[in-house]
Figure 1 (cartoon, rainbow, N blue to C red):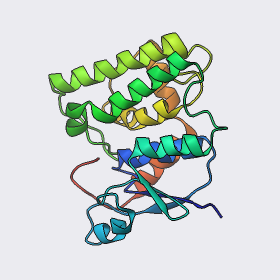
Figure 2 (figure 1 turned 90 degrees about the vertical axis):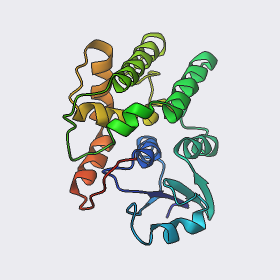
Figure 3 (figure 1 turned 90 degrees about the horizontal axis):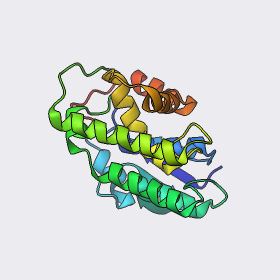
Length: 215
């Protein structure tokens, strides 16, 4: 039995939970999954021992808590150095960290206007701010694939933390039928149709909880 436990929220809504879950599944890291539905009366009580400010995801390693998606993946990269978590080439690695941190801290308009939802499509017109967010993300994808992705199908040829960080964006853009071509269309197909992504999406669609906003 694994000493690692990943606490996640609703698969239909919790974009932050998806990131480390996909990373661990893709790299074959054994873990137990605990799902705590969001915004329920006992959610805070269930998460209180984790010291995560009642937020998911949380990784528990033999009783020790790590919270925040990017911090969890960085911890696992240190714990399992045999895995490819970041590119080996120093400049590629710096770029991967740059785009991951940008994804972590930016794109407020996109997050607010198109919450992650595996069950429904977003049909409202997009604001100019959200369009700008999407165009920036596509520009990042093109840049990474052009300079570092020639030897594989991921942003940096092999799957890395950077790909996990963009996973919820693939769901968002797929469900608004955002027009894409060439490099970004190929990458979207790789990410969205990944077997683990499809498993997550299927589970999200089967959930029964309904909340107003994704995360």
